[in-house]
Image (tube, rainbow, N blue to C red; front, side, top):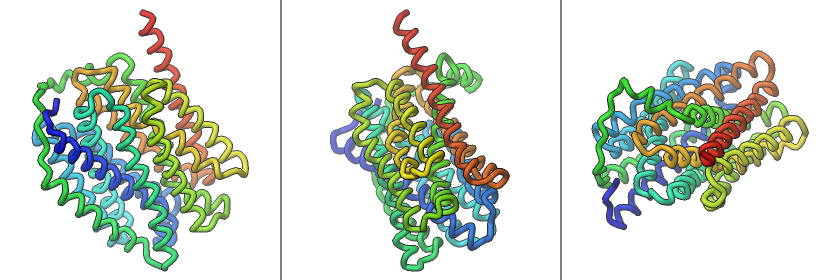
Length: 388
């Protein structure tokens, strides 16, 4: 457990929240800039999906190794490395024209995102033992705020005829601010050290109901990233929306995420983790179905309201159910989140190329249905556990 003064606790919380803001802002510049990238480089939907594949492959690999780096060098080193990866990746992505190099740069950015996913979440779980569900959701609000501002920021600069490359270069200022803040902040050391036999990791990380949690988070992330990556393109190509209105829809999606997390953090504490996730999954299915199968596309960004609490609440539920080897378990959980982020936008891109963008984007319904089913099975297991 972390031994911290009140001031240090506030500063640590602030840097974690800023990390998630930067995570959301940087990650979600790609959606509004995608049409411009495809047009400038004359790429297909599948090629766009391949570029995204690089980012989420990096995310997946980082979630696998970030825990090991944290155990050996501390969580501060994870955050510093994350910032360096973002700085290098964004610099290259905004400069290169070759699709392979763009994919490599997004891979480096993905390494930074994977480190951000593990580091701040692990810190908050340790610092706020009793109300971690609330603070994880509040931290996720900052991800939503950054995600909502990204398409708005991009849209305003596009109106000034500024290139998508320059838009990305503005992000470097935020990254440098984060690096300076993280470098000067002293993180307290954990007083508990657990030696893990790596041969035992499969037994530790896949016991009891954990596989259902992994399926839930992978399917959720596939849907969230799938929508974030392809919503602007979907609205422009299928709904004939303008660049401004389609980017406004993406802004609304992330604003709904942010508002939902701000309010939902308090609701989750009362309703319970698993019930909250199942309710949110069913609401998301409803919004996606209406938005895709009718002309009421406004329901697509409103999906964010129901998506909002799912990721942080799954994290809280896992850390509440499993107390031993929690860093190993959380690392595995975020690795499956990386699998979802890898599969979602990539699969949508290739299915869209083969069968049309409507069918490709409709995969988000399938992802969300898998989330709902796995959460329902988790709820049944929890009910059985409480009866025994």
